[in-house]
Length: 113
Image 1: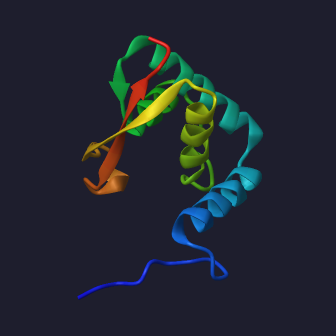
Image 2: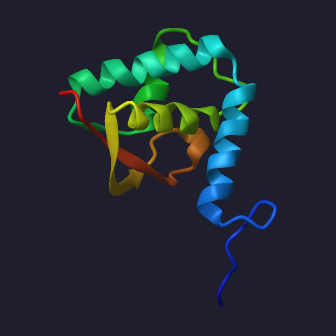
C-alpha cells in the first residue's frame, strides 16, 4: 500500500516541513529556544555525535522547563545545522525518552569538535 506525502497548501513535503518549523519556532518561548540552542552548542563541543535525547536530558538536569510545543527542538536543531555547528549523519537510533516510545531519532555529528 502506498501513501501520499502530506503537504501544506499544495507544497511538497520538504517545503511544508520548513514552514511548519518556522511556525513552531515563532511560537516558542525565546528563553527556552536560547537555552536549548546553547545546550546543543555545548554538547557539540564535547561529543562527536549525539541525539536530541542528550539535549533534552541536559535541559532537564539544568531545570529548564519543557516548551509547550516539543517540536520546537526541531527548529533548534535546524538552526544549529544552519549555523555550522552540527550536521545530520543520515543515521538514526531508538530514542531513550519515554515520551518518544522508542521511535527513531536522528544522530547528529558535531562540526566544532
